[in-house]
Length: 191
Image 1 (cartoon, helix red, strand yellow):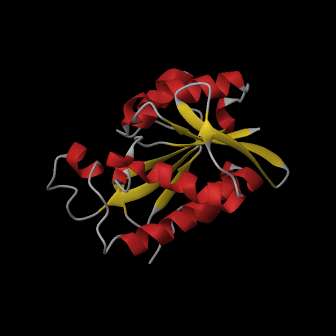
Image 2 (tube, rainbow, N blue to C red; image 1 turned 180 degrees about the horizontal axis):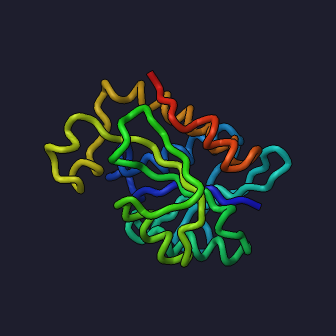
């Protein structure tokens, strides 16, 4: 069994914000698997799907970004999922819109949701899929304000293509593993 977690902030106030790119990708995956989230037994929404004969849990923590790790830990422990079978999806303010990056493991890179997941899983050895959200305003705004801003109308078509690309990367991770997925999807961008 594998766990795919999209990080974001719950509530309509945060819909469409850059920090919710992880939630947006979970929505795309749910649609592709014909699945719907339901309230979990903790601070998260969750569902089960199957892809390439692999059982998958899809999850959105409701703990807000900076405390995402508590819900991820609870689900991983309850279902006895190894850290290397947890794919965490988040936004990345260091990547431009239209780019995604997969990693097998690593630091939080300044992303507070990843920082929380690392802390609560007690490991950096889980794969992650980062979705680029940066534009030319990134250096001119406070980072907290930037990540909570909404995508512009001009950015939405590129974001949509990026999410489709990221959806295929997540599905590839389930079917083929992280190494293969990194080889196929890293270094490419939506034009």
